[in-house]
View 1 (cartoon, rainbow, N blue to C red):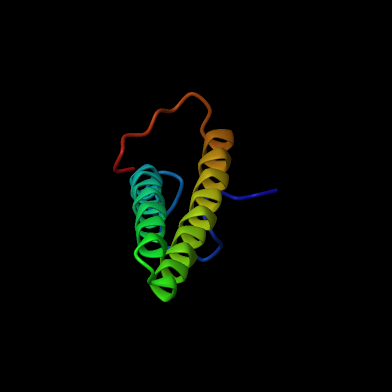
View 2: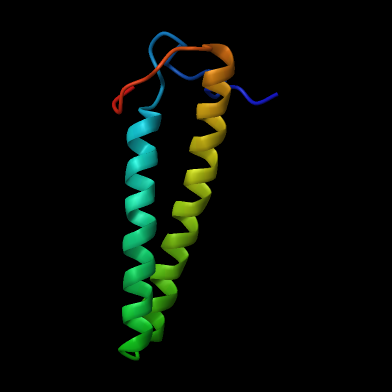
Length: 87
């Protein structure tokens, strides 16, 4: 069973450890930007920069998966509760 927050975290269900919705937005933005930069870098012949941007894009995808799992766990713990972008 996935918990909405890691054990020993400072936050609680009432006061979130992390602003998950904001993290989701920022990770999505980072993914889009890094993919665009990777394509541009490869197109410009800067393979090392393209690889670096592609690695950051993969990190953003992993972060998106972690965030979605925590959001799903939070929805199971608090059914019917809607959270703002900063909660």
